[in-house]
Length: 431
Image 1 (cartoon, rainbow, N blue to C red):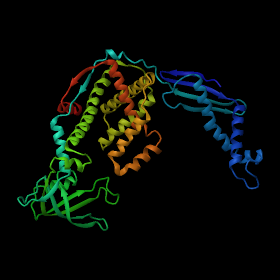
Image 2: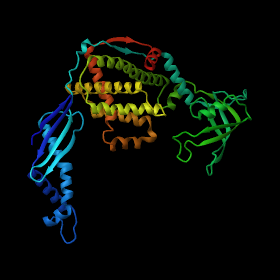
Image 3: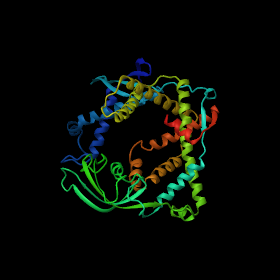
Image 4: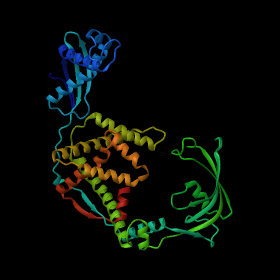
């Protein structure tokens, strides 16, 4: 079967094709034969159902199946013969159905654009290099020492500071909720560690031992459905203050976190901090590279891809603006951001295909296990999600492939290397 191009607008192509009656009849009979083997009709053995009975009972179902499955299959095969590469799934439209001529259909295709990569050696951008400071290493070691701290009663103070550990009786009442009252004696509140609700921590700091602090607040939206977003009043009775005594930075501290010595702990901290810093420096390098590529490369963009990407961006913007209304300037910026993302995504796909760049499955699995190790309590849910959700693994593979393409471009472009301090790096990223 051949396709005839009937209309062309930019990247949009309209093709028309015909599937003759004899082809449709053969496909329908094949479907009825499958049905005969798998369906049960009283009085007939599977596979022995008369054709007339099959036609009467399942004829329309078989024909509908041919329309939905076989026509699309034939259309896709015919499209492959044209060697046209669709950018998105083509849309199939049935134009007419006739007992004599068969089915006339149209295929609406957004074709993959012609992409010519730029001369990478002519692109100007900077590659940022940052080194971990001794202060960052010291700060990380102090955080680890604080995590392994011991606590002793602070008899020299009776006013709560943000560094205290507070021993308190905690009671709360949820108005209008059955069994919405609870009392918990001798609760430990570690302040300054993001372990206490901000509303409680804010009111408790500055109070005295013996005070009863009343704190009205609202449960977060991610709490249990029974209490999410409900108003609640906490009563916090301050009973005792303790101070945190950080663990001495020695070999014993290292052993508490699974390492042999303090020297090994320092090396591990430095390595992890440098990996994080390298990742952030690469983000800044990529930002400059993407800006340069956006200016250097021009080609038509598939409108459906841009529209889908714009919807993703729009949804994120609406999340940040609860009222849900967007200005004309915001809509314009959304279109520009979506177009840029699609342009760079298509360019990177082209480069990876042209240069044979790919990510070995071992690397993907390694990145997946890093996600699991970061949240071991939900390891099974994470693994099940990536195993059972179609396309989910591309959420991991995609960024890895993007970085591989970036490194390839960097090797060809040979950008100027710029050393940057941690402070300046974070400031540039924030801006």
